[in-house]
Length: 197
Ligand SMILES: Nc1nc2c(c(=O)[nH]1)N[C@H]1C(S)=C(S)[C@@H](COP(=O)(O)O)O[C@H]1N2
Ligand SMILES: [Mo]
Image (cartoon, rainbow, N blue to C red; front, side, top):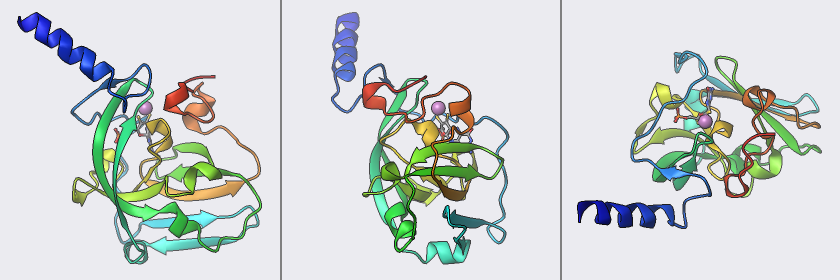
């Protein structure tokens, strides 16, 4: 009986419509970092948005917290095949960050403290689908998970959600970021399994 009910449980979880192909559910929150966790003093923290025309806007931590924030409930999907459902975040929509920005290009590169980069098409950052998040589960974002603030692009594989975000630069070419140079897909849609290229 125990084996049978466990079997049913597994089958139900695997057919959960929120689970993209090839993914399994996890309850915990794994930490995946390519290097050490940078410690960023909030007084030193800056976030910069740069356009291809050389214009840039920089926010201090205080200025960033003064921007309108949103609560976000979303599922996240790592290319290493774990998915976590119903995660809770708070942060600033990239629609807010990009409001009034004058740019003619369609690609962006996210730059992190510590040197990590990841490329994302601008279209994937807009339309209420991406945030710079600074709270998780109602608490300041843990440094291991990208605190003080990380990019959150939950409709793409989680490697696109750059931890310890420092800048977003707009650019005319879809240059590969850190994992993309190492074989991860340029785009990374979990629903069509854009894992590698
Ligand atoms: N700066 C930075 N951001 C990063 C990474 C990293 O190594 N450095 N790893 C990426 C990968 S591969 C994943 S799956 C998620 C992991 O986020 P987590 O550690 O909060 O689970 O962060 C992404 N963002
Ligand atoms: Mo990942």
